[in-house]
Length: 275
Picture 1 (cartoon, rainbow, N blue to C red):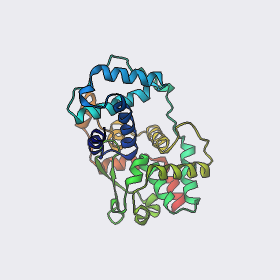
Picture 2 (cartoon, one colour):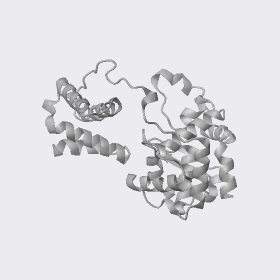
Picture 3 (tube, rainbow, N blue to C red):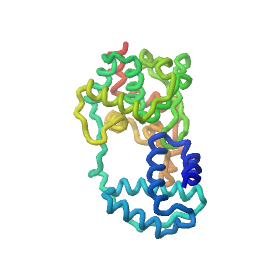
Picture 4 (cartoon, one colour):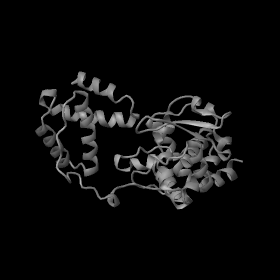
């Protein structure tokens, strides 16, 4: 089993740490019942998923387990069985996907600036302006902040792709490269979040964390009139095959920054707080 997990771990090395941890835990559980690649029949997958359902795993969690197993099968170049249509019927409105309101985002900004920790405003600026995932903030380093050129280099959490954004004047005062001298663990990022949530006086919701900020930023930018065709690539989302047509009229990164920043409601808040 250790050899299998070691190969999988290398394959997952480009993913964020939480994804590596979760996928390895799922595959370790699968391997306890089916330790050898020769055992990985279609029936093995169905038996494993039935076991997860019996254990109380919800459809979203079982879907994540399938994604992890696909990685395992890919490492050994084994075909993954086709699953029946509707195997994971998810009601998106029933899922726990907390999203901060504009008022709560403003409270985050103000709380971060008042906090005694010099690192916090910079992390919150990245989250509330660019909608960065917690993992993207965690791996951002001093070399990624070029204040002289007015640019920030972001490694996108899901595809490990790199994109470069302009740094608006409103947040330059809180982006200090020395506060990003080393990567942060997921545990540390959760610690920062819980401190920030309490300081901002935001009621805690199930599964609320840095991603709730990202969802909130998307909502306020859409409300501010940023077109979806601009917001999708600007946020670092990869176009699906069904929407490839959107890639052809794409504007340059600088033009998209200008479009988003001209409508971004939180930049005025940052200018007021950090100026």
